[in-house]
Image (cartoon, rainbow, N blue to C red):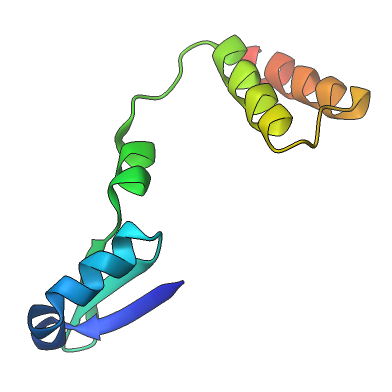
Length: 91
């Protein structure tokens, strides 16, 4: 869930906002109606700051692992689409 708060409100409710961010919410901090900062939990921060994968095989492996963990598996159509996209990116 996304929450928007003013900078003064963020200051006065910081502990609560940090708990929300740790649970997966995003907190947008505004000053005079303009976005000045976003507070996110550490898991989301790690996702945003980890280096980009250089090898498409790593991306495919990660995708397959996530699908298998969630119990959805991978269809042949999914795999064919991923391979076609990776070939197009290599050109």
